[in-house]
Length: 320
Image (cartoon, one colour):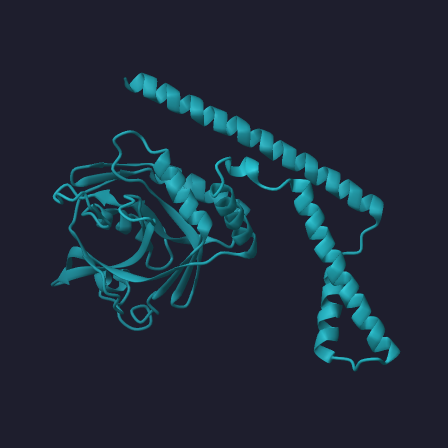
């Protein structure tokens, strides 16, 4: 799908505005009084997906874009996932892979039905007019892409910009919301307001990030990390120690040596009830089945990586 160009402006100070759709249509009442987004939480997986997309971009591509998935709760948006979308920018026009976007969205919703489209991401563009080689977060074509995603989102879309220029020692993230500038009911341009952004990680994501950081601090990388069996042994020893502490506490309460604590008792009860009761032979079967599934996923992942590498080599060869 190809769109014509309209100007885009940027404001770095957050402000409270009505939704873009309400202003463009002149709506009033509850639709126009929708709660504007003021906070955005981004998970590390989203940042890694954007950086991976930027690394695999075609030669000569100025920037890459993609769809953001997550959920909205009042004035807060949580971005949990993302996928790349092919596009091309030629002067004042932009072409977006609309069918590809919908196919990828359908596949993602099959795995994560609770996620919805909350916006789109892009990498920063080099500013040709800046002699210092600075990067700009918003381009004129950004308003066109934003209008496309306004039709894909239930609410006003969020625009996430990842600065891959590496002008500093960090990868900068910025989140924007857009408001059209209308004169006599006709939209003339779009104003992008920067809103608050924070990185949020779950417990599993935090463990993976700590592992990645620890691997990057050694010359050998991941090969220098501790042995997997040793890590499992340490984890089991800590678990056994906690179980012994809990068992000793219960024995002392039963013997009357210490007084019972209702809150501690409820915590112990909830913890024990959360452990499923499975016979050893059933657990062994479940473990072996899961192991086979993991090996199959690893095998398919390696095949996919090989295919992508071959495709990139062929594109480079045919491009020459």
